[in-house]
Image (cartoon, rainbow, N blue to C red; front, side):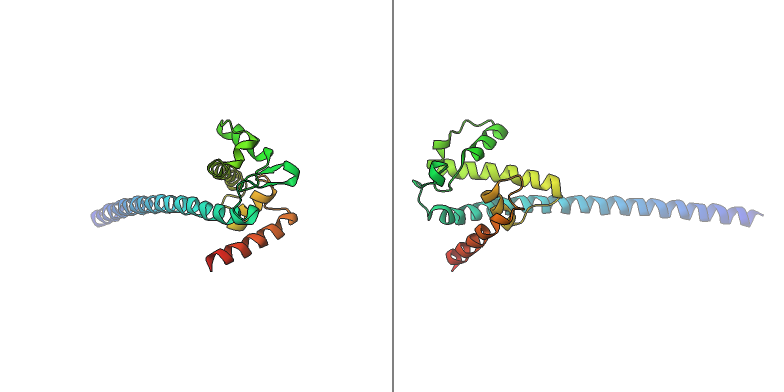
Length: 171
């Protein structure tokens, strides 16, 4: 009887120690996973910021061949990135800025408006799809709007023009 009780105590102790070891191992695995997740989130954010700058530079050529004085769409699109009033309205509403449409003629303002506008679109896209949009989807957002522009068939020729221009600039 004493051997049976001793065996039960020993097996119970081994089970407890085993669970404690597994718990400690799990805590370490979770800690390492969180560190890696943070690292990838930080590097992903930096990559996205860099990618937006690259996209911006190509779009300057696509939209106006780098001409900041360009006015298109019967006066509705202004500046190097051919910014419409709707874009300005969205940026001002979301960020509390005070841009007016004519500010799009200034290159620095155009770049800031682009980054802010597309950032809104990326946030909306992520919330809806649980992942970042692709470069092509971002370009299509710029052409067709941040809400659904990445879906419109009418933005496909624009993204093809973007890819062609990007390839020319990279060669």
